[in-house]
Image (cartoon, rainbow, N blue to C red):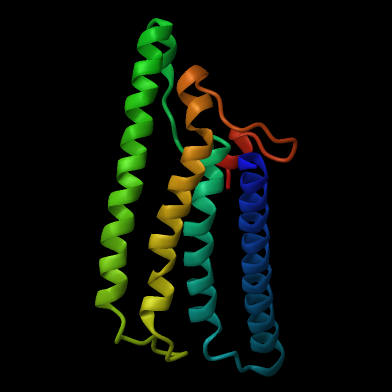
Length: 171
């Protein structure tokens, strides 16, 4: 049952990122075409593309963590004994988990503080854009929970035919 929930979460996360990236690419492409063919551009295109990029960044961070794409220095893990390496990876995993939860809490406060501000071009609440932060950190924490056992045990990440740590790091 847990594997099914994990597969659904990863699939939904991926498809949401794909949709956001496609929307962002279409908006930017349309804006460039209009600018060079008519001399006018879409007034809110740059702002909307920037907001979509914020959402893509925060929602994609969990998937990157899952595949081992965040910057990691594992020389110390490889230089010490297996038991010490597990202890170090436990400290790292707990640190990442605490960081995600603390950032979720403070970003919720930030979203709440900006609930009455609106964006310049689209006049939508800024809190909607900043909502990407708590959602992204919470999603990263959930992804961490799914990979933490394998990471602590042997330093491994989720393997995928589509993505490895090198490809994830290049995103």
